[in-house]
Length: 513
Image 1 (tube, rainbow, N blue to C red):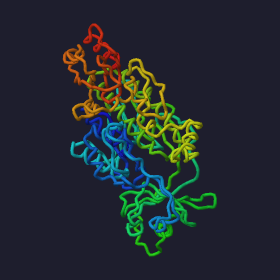
Image 2: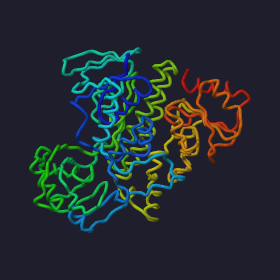
Image 3: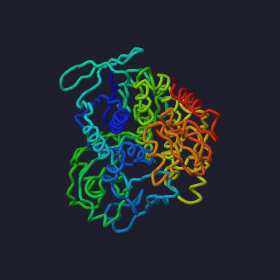
Image 4: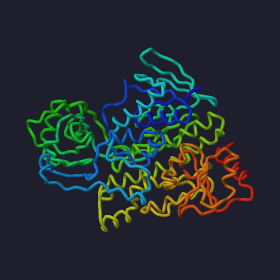
């Protein structure tokens, strides 16, 4: 029986790609006729880049990303014309750390909008011959202890499919979540309705070389947030829809949207093509449970995150990464069904923490964008973590980790968090020019200290890849057993009397065998 992925947005596409990568080709259904052309998020975090790297897609995504090196992360100006003339306040893009200090093996050169990301992943799936069923809706769902029965309605009418598990990546208004009767907690809608205008116009003559991820424009009558899509002709402009004064999303016709863009740019003669208009509201909510029987919620179906910090999309991609290898291991018979219990056990607390961090910033954006001692003090007082810790530093606590230590030693210093502790992402270090994350390569891997110990013969006996690493977080005679998702599952300071038996018993426990 196949695994069914419901939803063909970024998280659903990546979930399908990861399942196929682990040898479990899925069926994916999506109600739209193809990947969305309307981007929402544009920030792909370091952990998501590592996941793309695991799939061999990091270079392709980087090639389609907008080069913002030397540009601004956030800018503010009255109009685009005045921004290009230099009348602007800006927070620069963070400078990448020196390679020796960088916690990640590879970074994108800038932002990559979701439609561009989706195009890369969808093309990858097509090359693999994936079963992608566009213009297809899930219209019925029932499950028992052995599988999930779904009704799918598409271009060829109604069809029934029995699948082993279902991955629900069908968004904030998840049909699957509703069918399961899983509720949500949290504040829900945050603020009023907004309108997302995707438009095409050549702004380069007005920008005069200025680049940014987002820019707040404050001109009266057309204030809003301008978001870079390609840095030249493709843009998104978010404006408020004042429902309190009787305004409706449908009032934002293409003609009105084009006029708003011209005003915000400061050029009444600008040639504007409005490509798509979507109403939306910021939301913050958490599903009451991420797993119900053989159905697993990922992405916005599991959590909606306030739109600041690029936490929403990246949290969803991390859900898919956590779940895919576990589903594949169970289907191959390498793990017991109990391994899947660790998905919700691990991801629910991480998502809850991320939702909380985004809410703090949404209420006070200075907690995210502020720089200097005063901003540091404000973050400390509010309990706001450093963004890299939110993206890379959260830890897991489940039966799929031995001796987990979920308490973070720091919410500011990522290097202190990524120290090889069980439950954390394995630290990045170079081994003969190759990152430890690349050495893991989506499989169970043993990393050992540089000393000559019995660890390597034991790993050979068990068919485990093993690599010696010289790093301060790994004792000379110690070892880290790393999961396929690059999470440290076990840490040993010295070899036990029988390393083969020790590792065998550990794997039996970790894989619920």
